[in-house]
Every structure is written in structure tokens, then in C-alpha cells.
Image (tube, rainbow, N blue to C red; front, side):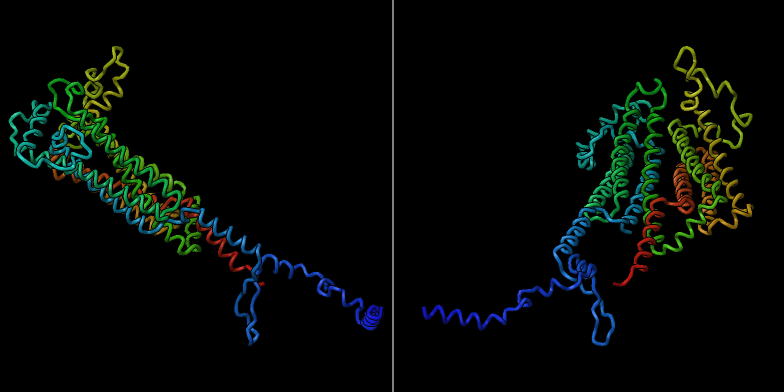
Length: 481
């Protein structure tokens, strides 16, 4: 009882000290500050103040939500596999591949001119990579060639040493084709795996790779047409189908053009992004209505040059350059007689409904005339477009200097190509001139493609330039909090 009384007296003495303030949360009674609370919650950057009163830089306030946002941003960046722009090394590799395709096109023309393309009668992509290594191997290969129509009709007296010379020409052409394929596929896989190409460029590279594989198939399909008697008239000159030869040549031209265009586009994209302000001014200038006709004319000129080159493939496949070796006349007039140009001999239907297109594609006289007309049209078009840039006051004022230089290059190449074509015809298709004429067609197409790259506005590069400028504007106008 005494202890209970003593305890009650102690509580009575301590009661005045247990006031209401003792049980009050002073931090909760402070006024609510939304901005300060958001900074604590979302981790907003807060500048630190140094001892001299100057802002020394932002310090990030750590918070769980800020860490979550940071991890989400990093995961989004990892999910974006391809970069915004392709590396310059990809452009140099594409241009080097284009140069290799240019070389194999010229060497393929030499193979055809020396009549070496039918010396290898089998298609062995793997085991055919090595030439015969002993006497028995050479005898076996020569025996296969002796069973071909070309040996029986053209080369019945060919010796083994003569066979070796044409064999090595065709073997080198095939090995070069394999080198082009491997030197493209392996670096392509590396650049894509190392994320050095943009997504659109990766798709284009895969398309070019498929085109290279298709080109190899077309090459054997073309050679196969010259190994069977049923694909050409009995007793005629054994040759490959002019249709398949033109398809093989056209695919090579497309492959080369794709490599050249994409390589130049990557380099131009880097140049434009290096100075976005100047790029915007250039785009505004190229989009002017005064240049609309010129831009469209360059595109039409590229298509015309390609069609003229393909008609040259028909001329080569039919050996049409060995007739009417004079210029500008063809016999007694500018054109042969109509009965010769549209002969019933080339029609395969009783009603003669195919006489027009079969003569245009199979009659050497009409094929050569078509090539002359297309070549003359190309030269006239280039000359007219150059005169338009030279004597039109509006175009002369608005056209950039790079476009003017490109136009001068096209004029030079088309003049050289016309001179090579005429001399090749007059001198009965000698090997050096004919090879130079084929190389000239590809060089002329290259000059037109380069001119187009300087004239046409690249849509993707323009979009990237606008995005770069927008990001720069956001960075410069972002307030410091």
C-alpha cells in the first residue's frame, strides 16, 4: 500500500511536463510544398551552390522512382539495336565492293570477247574453286569441253595448251565472283553484329547480298544456254542466250549501282549532319520549283543510260557489232530495209503476231539499230540537259556548284562513250576498244548516279537533320532548375 501511494505521487509531480506539444508532430504541421515534394519523389536535378555563391553543377537527388526511370531508359537504349546513322567504314566498304563489281563486269566482257565463257562445262561452287592440278585432271576437263557444241563447231582443232588459256579466263571470272560474294557477306555480318549500320542500311545490305547470290545463279544459267544444241539454230554459231546474257549483265549493273549509291549516301549523310544549318539551306535550295525539271530529268537520264547499256548486252549476245561496221549509215541508208528489220524468219507463230518484238530482240540488224537510236538519244539528252543548265538564267542562278560540276562530268563521259562506240564498230570490235566501251557504259551510269546524289533531296537525311536541329533547340531552351 505504501508503494502504491509513492508511485501515484511521482506521476502527479511529472504530469505538468506532459503537455500537448509533447505528442504533436511538428514536421506534419509544416505547409505542403508540391515542388519540393516532387523533387524528393522523382529525383529532380538540384544545382549545388559552392562557397563563392556560384552554381557548381546539378546534384541528383536519389529516389526509388528516379532509379526506376533510369533503368527503363537504359533498357530502351539497349532495345534499340541499330544506330541512327551508319559508320563511315561501312561506306568505304560499299564503295570498295562496287569497285570490285566494276572490275568483274569488265573482266566478264573480256571473257565473252575471247570466247572463254563456255570452257568450263560444269558448275561446282565449292570443288570448282581449284583448277586442274595434274595431267589427268586437265585431260578430264578437256574431254568435257570436246563434247560441247562450241568445240565441235568452232574449235575442233584446239590443242590442250590453247584450252588452258581460255579455261583460266573463265576460272578467274568465277573465282572473282566468289571473292565478291565472300568479301561482301562476311563484312556485312560483322557490321550488322557490331551495330555499325542503321536499320534501313542493314535491310539494303541484305538485299544486295541476295542480289549477289542471284547473280551467281544467273551466271551458270547463262553458260548452260550455250552448252545445248536445242537453244540455238542448228549449225549456227554456238553462243549463250542473249536474253540470259542481258539478265546477267543487268543484275551486275543493279548490284554495282546499289553499292555505289548506298556508299555515297552514307558519306553524304555524315557531311550533312556535321552542319545541320547549312544542310537545311541546301535542301531549301534543291527543293525550289526552278529545279524541278532538272531533278526529274536526271532521274530519266539514269533510266535511259541503263536501257542503252542493256541494249548493248543484246548486241553482244547476238554479235550484232560485227555487221554494218560503218557510221552513221547502215548499208545504203541510215537504216536497213524494212524487210530486213522485220523479217518473217524470226517469227515463231503462224499469224506473225510476234514479228515485232522478236525482231527487236533477236534480229541482229534491228538490235544494232535500236542500240544506235538509244545511244544517240542518250547523247542528245545529256547535251540538251547541259545546255539547259548553261543558258537558263534561273537554273544557272539556283543550281549548286556541285551539281554543275557533276553535269560537266556526265557530258565528258557520254562524249567518251560515243567515241568508243563508233570506233569499236568501225574497227570490227577489237578486244581493247570493246572492253573499254563496256567499261565506259558503267562509268557513264556512275556519273549520272553521282549527279543524282547531288541533285535529289535524301528524305532520310533531311529527317535526321530536322531531328538534330530539334534536339539542339530543346537543349538550348531547357531552363536551369
